[in-house]
Image (cartoon, rainbow, N blue to C red; front, side):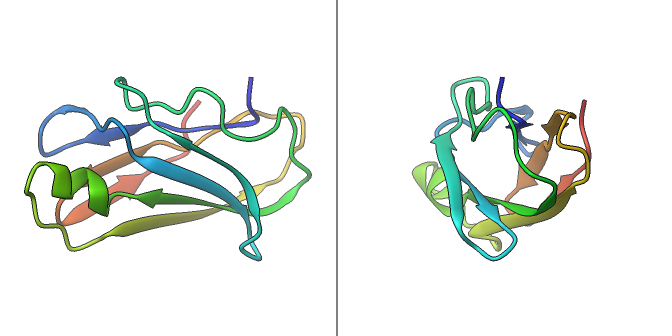
Length: 108
């Protein structure tokens, strides 16, 4: 299993957000991995099985997702910075989106 996992739910439609590009980067902006959400809004494998402790970022490119349905959005990209404190733990970072809002939390 990847050390970092994520999924995206479109809160405005009450369903997963499919085919969204997701990038995992270091805090300095260096690429670590990338993927696209599947039909369940999840990225099956995103990055390595282990990351060193430190500052990381998930970048969700949601503009294309909203454009596909003709929905204008205020946030073309959602970026979530987080800290990997323990290299042995799994980190799940979910994202809830709508055209004019988003939220996240530390999942399990």
